[in-house]
Length: 281
Ligand code: TA6
Image 1 (cartoon, helix red, strand yellow):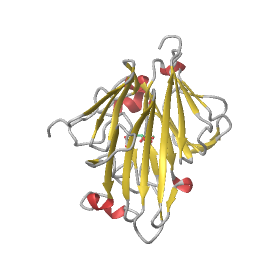
Image 2: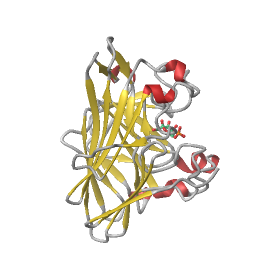
Image 3: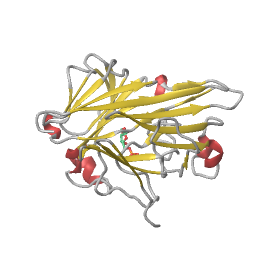
Image 4: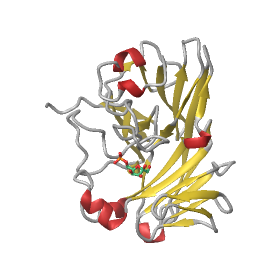
């Protein structure tokens, strides 16, 4: 397969690279500094989900609420989306419909008819990501969704996620339900699904003074993930020690906190990212 054709957008201090494959924002640099991270081993020929950037998880997350669905994270992130005919203030936008997915493995598990739009906007130096899901049908249905955002960190050992203190979560590594105590820190594989969104916002400290604020819209949960050294080494599109370069902080709605899409209705899942340079950024 040939390499995917990128869309490159340079506006102000930002440079974005994105692909119609999965409507995936692959990288975001601000003043040349990587904010949204892409694996050096990401597959960019369309044969797999892009490892890094902001993969769109829908209409199920991971293997779905029952743990029996594939492909992982649903069908959007490996589909070829259509660049939107018109854009509002977005710098990038794509559309896709359930009809476009009927011949794909896993289509039998689609919840009903949908039309999705992924819009990317720049508000000054802030990045806005928005997934809109419209149900043109006559019956409501429930979907899981997440913006699986990979954020660059300079020092994983000192990276922290703030805003989730006291929030209950499922630790998918141990299978235990826990209560977050203070900041989320990274010492080995971390795979936590928080029943909260850190309102008014979440803050990722990158370990060397850089900070990224995340304000979500429509999310009911936050997923925080890092595969750890062994997990990273096992993944061909990551590899040894690459886990030290990123943390995933994901606006999500899964399981019993999934989203209901009413008949003829539209639901939105968004995230706005703002970089606050630290001492060394
Ligand atoms: O968002 C966390 C997670 O669900 C982890 O459990 C891990 O599976 C990660 O997503 C990556 O999933 P992927 O299908 O992209 O390899």
